[in-house]
Length: 249
Image 1 (cartoon, helix red, strand yellow):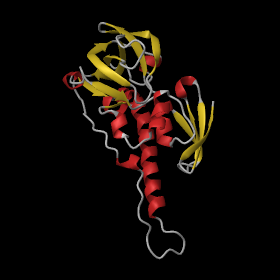
Image 2: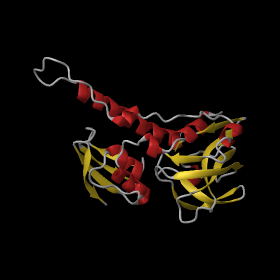
Image 3: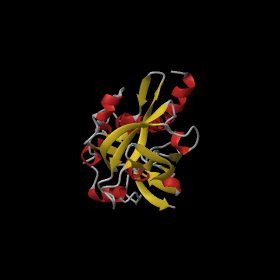
Image 4: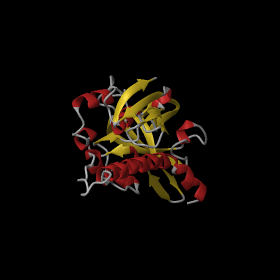
């Protein structure tokens, strides 16, 4: 596979990686803050881990169409919110000319099919998943939407030079995030399901609600402001002591 294609396909992986680095940084700071002794302390403080750091989301590591087709009939949930456009689908064809919108975090998708299609060579359809020789798409319905029978599709990988590359593991949860993050309070989940931020939410909760396309203003986790793209409707949230205190936008 040529280097240019790999770099292009990795565009969404780079975004997800950036978020992964940030989450790793959150973990590092949480552990560091919990374990650093107070001035003149004679004994080390007991480590206090954020329960989010203990969440394990399984991966499937697909590398063939057969692997992807194992998702048919199953529900998956969006992890990489505000990154992937989706399209209406008819049979084995996605209407790339008319995106419906952007997938938000924790949205459940019922997978109906896996198919391949030639995408355009430029534009939003190849902004996250490079064209390759053809795209691989998941066809799905949205059980929680106003039209749960409508069929949609989202690209998740491509075929090039005799092989497939997929980003399914980086884009989706294979387990219900409500269970993975069952320690989050009901009011936080209520805001997440409305794709909105509210005072009292943590950085991770707001990111699940508004998406992973964001800019950080400050480096201290839990004490800074963050601007979320929010599907082209930017929202800036100010955090103090780990909780949102102000939502603007």
